[in-house]
Amino acid sequence: MISEESPLLASTGHELIADRFTPRKKRWIMYVVSFAGILPMFVQATFVPSIPQIAEDLNSTYAAVSLSISLSILATAVGSLVWAAYSSFYGRRSMYLLGMPFLCAGSCGVAMSTSLRSLLFWRFVQTFGCSGGLPLGAGVIGDIYKLEERGTAIGVYFGATLFGLAFSPFIGGSAAQYWSWRNLQYSIGLWGLLEMLLIYLSFPETSRPGALGIDKLTRRRWIHLTWINPLSSLWLLRSPNLFAVMLAQALVLISDYTLLVPMAYTIGARYGITNEAIIGACFLPNGLGNFIGAPISGRLSDIVVRRWREKRKGLWFPEDRLRMTWIGGLIMVPLSVGASGLIMTYVGGPIGLSLNLLCLFLNGVGVDFVFSPIASYNVDVMHSQSAELTAASAAVRSIIISIATALVIPSIECVGVAWTYIIAAILALIGQGIIFLTIRYGDRMRASVDVGFTIKESD
Image (cartoon, rainbow, N blue to C red; front, side, top):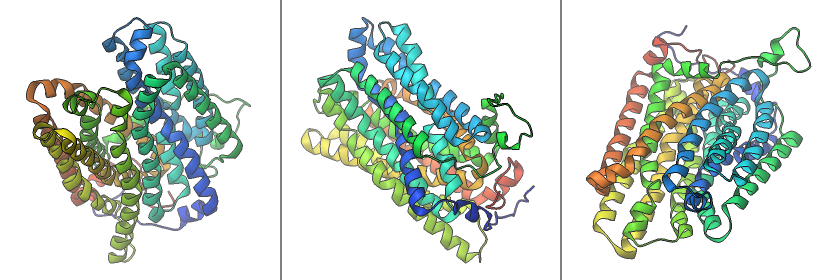
């Protein structure tokens, strides 16, 4: 048990484990997990622009087909918990390989759906199958990278996945406008098949030798099945500091969803954009901001960790990494979302549209300046259970964001775009305040509830 004033002391144990893989092999592993991490984002974001076409094909309504969005959020939350929990027993590689067939079957099922009921069922299967991409990727990075390299790796990883998220609406809108939503779903199934082959042929197991639950069994069958409660990962969030940074992430991400989800009703309506592909293209500045912001913030957070560690003559306090978040959480995010609301209300024409696209870019950069250091922090303090913690955080965060997202359009109709965006900016500032408290009192928060923190880097 750690005391209130205990730093986490780094040792060379995990560095020796991380050196199992050459730098070139690590880059390849990063490529593979980033490719898998894009999938859940792509599956969700490409579907939204296709909803009008799907509703017409299935003789349904926009509102009814939109239920699949909420269902996919639920499937993502459940799936990420399941794949992360079982990865600690069977390994990261096995869970990737087991999840991809669900994605392939679900994608083909969605493409062949002739009724709303079958669409909802196969949509759940599809998103359940690919939902392990993000938490498993975070776990892999925790396995193969050293403490002072981890922020850069996490930044590159999330930059790639979030850039895919921003491109997805444009691809989905273009497919709905010029191709077919069914063919798009078949293409996703093919992507999943190629990813499964790539993992099978070239992706090694990255977990520490002997650390998996199945490795500790003295006797086991050729096919050994065991029950692991996927909800047990949620219990990690009873730690005050882990819950605090998860909540801060959610409050900052709400600004992102506030800008992006009602795009057709805000930027589209205000500036007379009706083409689905062009509306999808308006998401690109945010994705470019994600792509640029994530690796930069990850790299800077590594520099911050090294400098504070040097000041303390080798002592490591994991909350030092969170000091990088203030640029995004205090400045970029609240200013970009608040300014966007005011510009949309008072500035019309091409100038107003251009300024809003600039705000979307700055918001993408700012969100990553908060998101990436927190993701690295989670891996730092719990890298033996980093996949489970990432999944638990994502599940609870998804619930919070889904509730907030459902309130965005009603809020715009009730108080207007400007006030809705200002409220989102205030929530982001509250999130940054929570991070400041975590930096200040992180040692006491960790000591109050010890959930198995990384006391040594070899843990």
